[in-house]
Amino acid sequence: MEWKKKLREEGFIEVSDFRIELSLDNTFLDIDYIPRVLVYSEKTGRWHVLRNPIPKGKTLEECWNNAVKVLESIASGLERPVLDDEETSLRLWEVLKSLEGKP
Picture 1 (cartoon, rainbow, N blue to C red):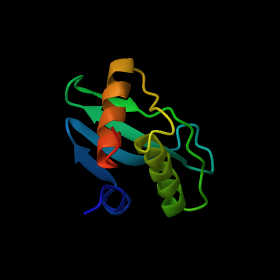
Picture 2 (picture 1 turned 120 degrees about the horizontal axis):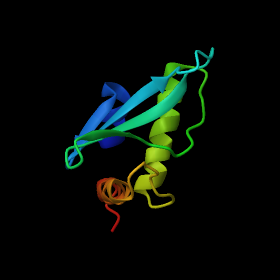
Picture 3 (picture 1 turned 90 degrees about the vertical axis):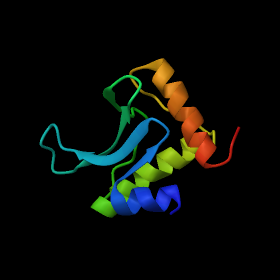
């Protein structure tokens, strides 16, 4: 199954040593949920939150589609992933670009 479709349908993908999950954040008990991308790295043994801006959506589906669009932009090389760890960000960028066949 193509990675973007699987991510939208199942809410996560596993590639290389990463588990990439779609999530919604309601930390501040806002009425709206904020789409998030969570990344688990086996190498660091930690979860990381993608800090790239993801537009809010009106529905769960729209939120997740917006999150996948940000990952598509990263995979196509248009932007870099922003995580709390630069080495993990670079490894994730390379893995995502490989999914799109980019060097």
